[in-house]
Image: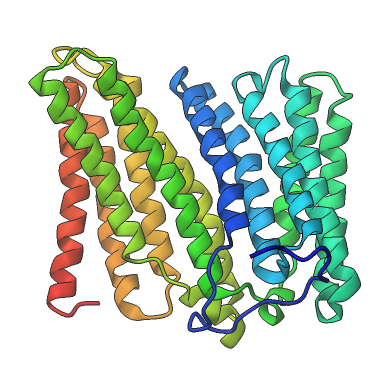
Length: 388
């Protein structure tokens, strides 16, 4: 279908998930640049699994994820898919490509380019909201709140381009805090204009698929670089099992009830917890892919290093912790009860990291795979016997 040249933004929220709405082709195309960007982030993390390397990875991941969040939340409320919106999306996509290019040296000589690209991404979002402000009167209070906060944050990122390192990163931190605090502080404005439940939950699921794909890519790329051996193949199967199991646990429990409750029952906090818990979830899922790649590439007859063992076990523990928190935001009791299983799974993963100092790589990834599969089996047994 051809887009119209100009169509004023209009409010497109739905009160329940029964209102049918799916991601547009433009949104799916927009996601493609994040496939590349997440791959770049994974490669950057893979080169340094130390604490400082992990912190740098997180610091680069957060603004990239927030760029996706900004476009997603605008689209779920005001998307028109006209030529004007497509051009603004193109500007954001171009800037995100620049972000991806600068990831590897995001805290060195390329940090100014990274900051400028992020400021441009946010500028595109601000312009989109200004369009909506002119045409959607009922949403003006929320839009005004967003535009003020986002403009201050984007300005700090832009100013940081002209500030020397390491002061530049202080501007980034303050700007990022303001960016994230802006929707959090909107409070009851969310209750009046909550995003479309079905559309938003689908969009978060699609981004989760992107990061799960990194685990698949890790298995394929690592095996292609190794001499074919039975133990290597089994390690790859374990890696695929981990990704498949984590995806199973997430998508079988993906629900829009927390979003609906924000509108129908004024339950803002569970909705915000549901939203922001996805950040550590996608960080941990991306990290799992990196950890799997390191294990497949390691020497099979030598005990896994402390850094690699703690990394993969810690990433899976964080996955279980965040999956449990997502279950706790549900409005019905059975998912909340199942959250305990995820928390126990997180503790077991940490226990393996503690006692597994002399474990071979296949033992570590095998135990993690069994742990993930065990969570799926528990899930299936509860469904079978009516525990959901």
